Length: 437
Image 1: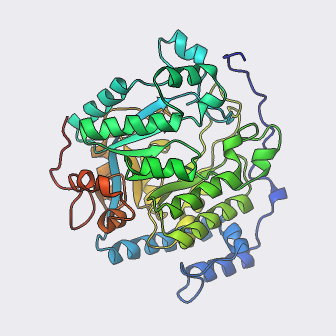
Image 2: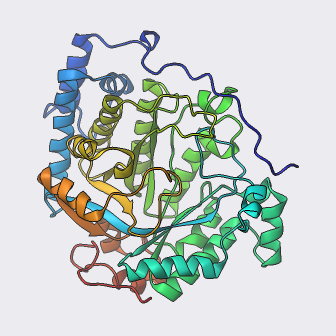
Image 3: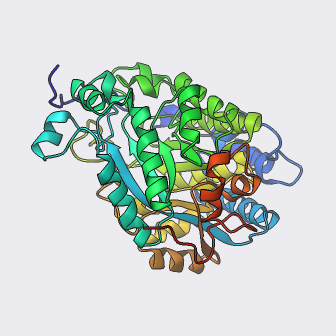
């Protein structure tokens, strides 16, 4: 098999805003807003009607203003109930791209590459353990507490070079190597790993739970059309089967893992798809209580991808998705949006739409998934957050309720590592705690 990238045709993704998708009548919009935003209407303990959720995702103008205000109010009430009013959290992290090889072919991705390109750049199929530890060590010196492991799904199933690399070092799989690399970071630097290796089995989750206090995998979308239809965003990517990804979310709950997931906005999904995706996340969280944060991420087109000509998600579309996610998932859920994918003014818009977490922000490493979008300076992010009446507050990789609960959410073998970085009263990052570098 050739290791060169094969150019994919530009997907024939329909305009997301065409009239054929249907726009709700003003009366239908007002009725949905009343049910979702009025005390005594549909609340977070109820399951909202998918049609109402779909309608609210189309909110614009005055209706969007009302929707966002209701979401922000719900967020604020949840933070007060949690004993930390006004706090918007972030995790100071390093981004470790363990391997950029993958067996999938997502049409919007620039993170993934091929063995030939890595070889020409003088890079191996994977980062070596000493390279991984050095990244973590540099982050430790800058006060980082999280090591985010991001990588392609099971590259050894597609690329002989990946299989050979693992075999030569005695690893049975990429997940086996993730465990070893995370263990080395934990032991040698004290940074807490957050594992984001894609689709996992229950057994793999249990293995990684011993070295990572939290894990994650984006649901992205429940749309089967985007997976099954040639030319769509996830066609040809076996790990983007929505049924498989929903199974992973469910299994993570059974294993009691603090788990991060989320949706992508603007990859060709319809508003109904988006509504069903948000509701699916809410349903799995109600079953297990393990979804620690939900990322709502806007699509940004990138050069050298099959979707390079697809329009970016419009701001109002994105803000509506954030606000609806907040109203559907409730005041106790942490709703996150990446601050590096929008402007400073738009960061304020995200806060005013119900966001209460910025996710991982690195003072050292780039966002390897969106390398053209640098992280905001933390002082600037603090100023933006303060301008909206909130306080930027550092957390660790697992969200506070899971840190404070301990087992079964945090593995017994990680309790001391987590306690070294967490405030024992709040579960947030401890004041003055530093990792050993």
